Image (cartoon, rainbow, N blue to C red):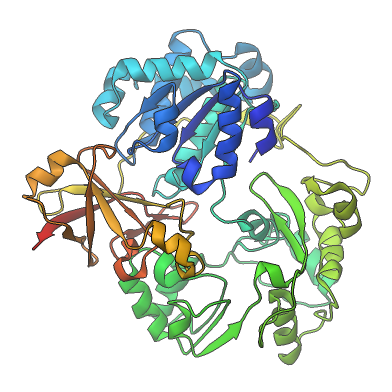
Length: 530
């Protein structure tokens, strides 16, 4: 995120929420949005379902999934055509506007309506609302990124923010909402295949040498590694023979789950470290019991780059151990040096030395100040509530001229509906924790598919309560909910339920740059069950 969650309630005058069911997936963030609305801030929501935020919106655009670039280009077409761009910001702080202008001039509201289904006048109203009420913040989540065009979608959001001068100001920016509470921290500290901690590229010789010297080792690999989806294909191909899965459940969270199971079964050795026996752990050769958040010390880095302390409330139960300790003890038994930390505080001390954006973060400061937002380069730096205040990290912000591209798999006669997936307020991710809660399970006890009444009539539902949903990769049976909150031709399934896993159906096609699968668009058919 370029900005901070508390800024929204205090500074933001307009929100553009796209690809995010904010009130259900990020309810605390939604609370700040609603506080801003109470003082008069505007809200524009773009979603194929009439989510709660859509019902609260000043402008709600119900579009066809996978057409984000088209509607974003359409908004920029209106903003440029009506003279609503921030010309001073564009002139002083950006480059590449002419290339962008040439592309977006073809995305008139009328053409965008044909592509997306958004009425042309509604698109104009959304563009004007966002451009006029400043500062304006874009909030997005995996409805933007989980596409084969996810990188294009994110760049288009950045284009829109720069065009209107909504970057480098309090209450503005481009703000991805992360899917779990320490996803940001995992990425910050090297949990990606192409970087060391602090986003230092593994391919750069100077970075490689830096970490070799710090860790007292030689020959660190300078090649980009595999993403999760690529690891599964590698297992099937025999290129990946062992896998260590920590606090992740790919048997429910990865696309094309039948393929994932087949790939995991090809491994010579599978280790899973988790707090419950998940669907993935059931396939493991060895299961290591991890400790929950309440049983360990450490830090979490939240969605707005905010580093906060986690303090142990109870000792780890049974034979479970904190994750950092398990990793250190395994490394030591395998003969590695440098894993002799006595506490997570010592780990943070090394992080501060080797990771410039965390250079001024320490447990002592976190105890005194409560939280710090990176970059915090030095011990006397106060942290950074919002990024790009005076300039971009590359100097000038670069506009990317992007043409709309369709999703890899679209409906046809055999599979006539678009499936999109998402989350519910009462369950979290793969449900390994929340579905073990009796109270939460009472709220939503089983999986379901949302279907528009017109589509229910077209398949001859005739009062049936259950349906079979099939894609080219598999099929599931589940309850059906007929509702006008979903767009005709689109169906929605929450992905939390192992017994009717939405990801049995989804497409593992990848964004060519970010390597994120296309969870949000695939073609399915639906058959009533008697």
